Image (tube, rainbow over all chains, first blue to last red; front, top):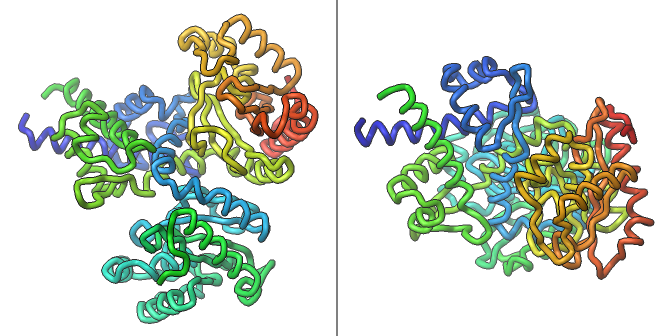
Length: 262
Length: 262
């Protein structure tokens, strides 16, 4: 066995093991070994080996009758991200205050490639068709959070996101023209916040403002979301945006950041 | 290469890769390769291979100057647990209502061996010295959540937890005598809720009530926590416990469970 074979095996089994963990989802909360093999494309003997390893580590359990499920121990993996990023704990009282004042869900998110990841959230009511929670990913181009994060991102990152992952239409409102998106980002940067109306989902409105670290770099977007049945874009801009910007600035100050630096 | 060698390699590299991910924490948010080797006990070449694999999968990134950090993508792993357990989404409005009414943090947790794992939480203020978030683990025996979960757990599970992991003293108040703990569990089962005072941390008080699924099995504990500076155990029992039990019963009803079944 040469070193390169060992390397390849190591890489592959780590990647495959995590892929197997991710095969458990809302559509497949309790898959069988055969279903997992089908979902991942791995052989049944490989799936069996990964399940045995993951069961021994406490991440999956057999429910009897051949079905498997994730254990709450998988949450610990993400918790290591949360506890190693002070921003998330500092954000909690601000998210709660914002949710209480607006009576709408408040979220904090960061950019991961062409997607936005929710890193903290106070849910007030369900607006979106998907179940949004910490770790949920949505396309950056179609959300106010993504627009804020891209507005202050380095040019090369924006180029990569817009060129490598051409913006897809999700609703009939989604802006997909790269020139129009770049203009929208410039506008967000100028005004200091973003609102997006029904570009990710029909009936969904959201507003976001940037959160800065002590160097002034935008490290997260603070967002408030509502539905067209409860608010108009104009109301959102008049009533929620000032509160949102003020809250994001206070969180930035907690991080030692310079509010409103450009 | 025999099958057993392949098996062993696969198991080991998956286990080691996840162990490496977990080496990033509050104390080591941006470790170097050398620090990761020291934290995990793995060789530097092994750490390098895992880092390269995890970087390619998007779970870690190099920050330049030899330091590495977790990306928000690790949250997605836990999100698959959250989205495959309807309980967590159903709990959100109840947690928020409880937090608003009590002006204290509200939590939902489940049992994982001898520990309790927070699976959902609305933080109001920080009471504990540790940063509690979804995925945080605390010893079951010293918490009101753990007492509730053990009170209705199968006897063989309680035996395993108490005998395999003998209860450790965490504060001078922690009940560590197995007979006394069993009596406390019987009392929780009789009264339908639990309060625990300063057994996990000096100054920390908490109350918990059981959440049941449609079969009547206790699947989670709903908790409210406060500090000795803001409440006494008597106040907690008089003012918070009735609200907590009512909220847990409503969540059980949402799950199709039978509230107050024993």
